Image 1 (tube, each protein chain N blue to C red):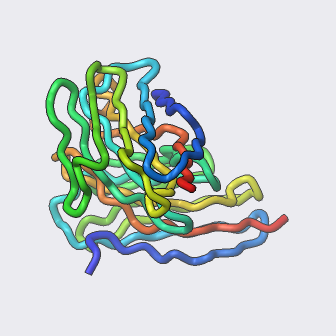
Image 2 (cartoon, rainbow over the protein chains, first blue to last red):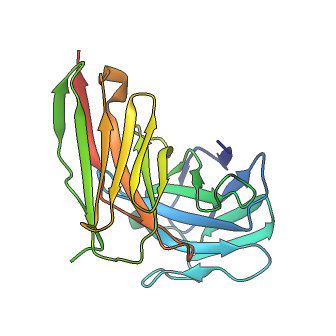
Image 3 (tube, rainbow over the protein chains, first blue to last red):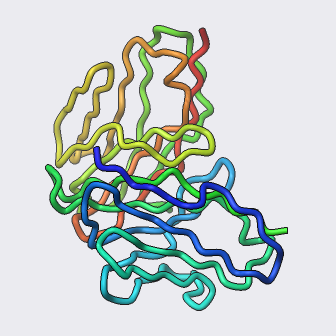
Length: 118
Length: 110
């Protein structure tokens, strides 16, 4: 299957700072990427849909000014957690859809980024 | 009521057992059905992908979709300790985002 990478794999930051997480599709071009967060022993919660060249679509209850998403190219989307607080500590996972794959609904996930805000 | 219901378990079986994982859903517009495996502290890995009703087999894994009952299953034959993970079902309508179940935690004991 297609490969999606994330960087960094983990990050620890102080409260009030901003953290940027990168999501890259390595062997395909992704017009659409998704950002999720996952708390321990819970399922994935979709935060937003990132569309290349346009504004992201945020799910209800997700603050767009706090979670800034930029999808500047077909292989890169970034999530910036602004003014992070301890309650933002979570596992953030991105996924990408490969439009050129065998079936255009398959989603491939990155390995995730564990954010800890002190 | 959630759109996708999945028994969180935990489910514990002996090595070699047949495992059955299930999800039910309420949205009849769902057409694409996926099963993901997620190891602790890792991103989900796509295991099986099916479109509409029917069966799909890949090695020890078989996915079944029954749209009339709004019920999907994943069967694991000859389960191995390495199959111990959380299994997530997911589905979508070809409109973009997928809806995920809460995941079932499986432990296969040697």
